[in-house]
Length: 390
Image (cartoon, rainbow, N blue to C red; front, top):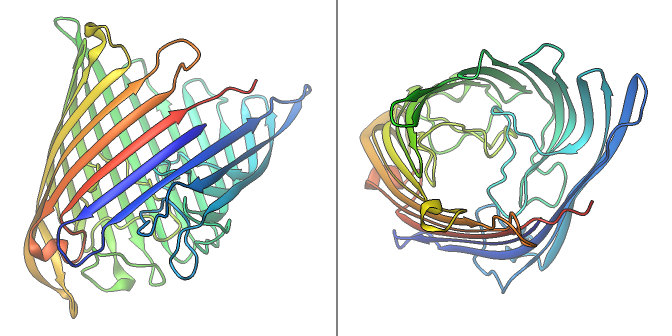
C-alpha cells in the first residue's frame, strides 16, 4: 500500500504549538497460504518503509518518529515476520501483526499502523461462532522506531463473536495488561428492513476499564490513581436508504475518570464508540449526542464518491483542579463539527485507490481545553494506492 499522508492541527489557544506532518510510506504485507496435511504451516512479513515530505519542523500526532532533539527522521523502516499454523478451522499466528481486537486495537489512522508482537489464536469450529485468545508482549506505535518502545510486559486477551442470524450479532472481548489495566467490551447490533427499501441498524456498545496503581494517567483522571474505574457506553440508530445514511447516537461515561486509553500499551484505536472523530467525547462523566449524515454520489454518475458530515456536542464533564485532582472545579462542555470527502476508484488499473480529505472544527470551554485539547482546526489528507503483488 503506497500512502501519502498529511495531518495538520491548527491550535487556537495561542499557547500550544501547531503541529503539521507530511510523509510517504510503502506498507507491505506478504502472507503465504498453508502447507497441506492435518496441520498446515505458513509464514508472512508485514512492515513499512517511509520518508518525510518537507522539513516537518512541527511534526506530531504519532505521524513521524523524531530524534532526541525533536527533529523528524528523514527516512525510517519498521516491521517484522510471523509464522502461523492451522488445524481444522483453528489458526494460530505468532510474530508481528496488526490487531483489530476492540480492547487492544492497533491504530491504523496514521501514516503507518501500530504493531503488536505475540500470539493470536482464532477458532471457527462452531458455525457462526468465532473465539479468539492470545498474548502480546511488544507494542510499537505508528511513530515508534523500536518494536517495544511502549514497554509492554504482557497483554492477555480473549473474546467471542456470534452471529445469531442475518439480523442480530453480538460480541464480547477482554484484555488484562499486566500491572496496567483490565478492560471488557460488549457489543450488540440489530439490522432490519423498513418500508420504502430502507433499513435500520440499532447498535449498543460498552467498555469497562479498571486501572491498576502502576498505570499511566491521561488528562481525564479525577480520583486516586490506585482506584480508577470507568464505564463508557453508546447507543446509535442508523437509517440507510439508497444514497442516504443518517446516524443518531448518544454516549455516556460513568466512573471516577474519563476513558483514558492507549497510554498503557492498550492500543491507540481501542475506542469503538459512536461519537469518536477528532475528539472521542470521553471526558469524566461526559454525556454526548451526535448526528452523522453520509451521502453517496452514485446516482450522479460518481460511484465511489462519499461525503460525511457530523456534529457532536458533549456536556457535564467533570474537570479536576490541577493541584488537587480529587476536587471538581467545573461542569465543562465540548463540541465538534466534522466533514470528510472520500473518493475510491471503482475500476481500471487504479481500482481501489482512494483520496480522502477530512476536516474537524473542535471547540471547548476554557476549563476543559486547558486539560484535554485546545480549540483546534484539523486537516487530514490521505492518498492510498494499493498494489497486489500476486
